[in-house]
Image (cartoon, helix red, strand yellow):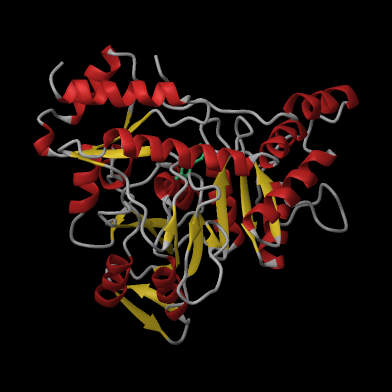
Length: 394
Ligand SMILES: Cc1ncc(COP(=O)(O)O)c(C=O)c1O
């Protein structure tokens, strides 16, 4: 079976991990943590990077460090991984869902603008944006760079700044993706534009530590709060004296050692991803009824997953196609289930618009093909042949 995702480890992985084992530095104290954080911060082009235990805890930590809590609301896309609304709920705040952009599948700034215009009012006393339906304070927007393509960040940043919202980017799936702003001479890396950016290093991510995550930021204060909150918030002058509720989100030195070896080779990994996308484009373009992933002129996608849409004219449903591909040894995954359809959220989410037609349509017809870094050109050809055969009824 050609797997959907298989990691590639950096050449120095064994050396660095053995170093941890041989020296006994296996907990979160150890030099690889600092080295991984520094090299990752340089890769994203930010001042600070703070390791965590997962992408989910990175999101929670970033929101907590920005002071998001009970009574607050955070705007999130309806089509996303469940960790996004979960992280908002962990803080005591509530997620407000927005429909997504049909081309990039990301939070749609037009829906964000509409929500602010139709459902919010700015309260000059508290200097907060209040949600008219709930009275809650809308404090932040959480754009997710889904499947490796960046969001329309200029518009999102403008709306956030005009309305006093924090921006927490979720770049879990977009390590190395770039947004090309018309206003700046150089492209901006995903994760570097908001008040904080969050990454996952789960085994299927471009840079992996097995499990793990990172919060990046240019703000000294946010970085300092993340460091305190992820380590149980010991008092500065007295260890084991605690004034704040905090968490243990500490990554181990062994994970950081794996991560450092990965960052050293990230440019090679990114070029493998682009080559994979080019090969799929060549092999699949012209197949009627299959919409291939696009790259907008203002973005540089890293094609974390090669995500395609099965249109009605394809002649088979997405489910039929996935099961026929499986019979031929090709594993696939369907898109996320929209957050508003998740049983766990039936009471806790708030709609940020009237409906979610785009997110619903994408979730019904989207799926992704094998996209791991270890995928060979021969395997990509095999997948393209299998898709073509399935479509032609062979
Ligand atoms: C967009 C997105 N956000 C957050 C997460 C959560 O990361 P983790 O699995 O490391 O907790 C993931 C995925 O795995 C993700 O894809």
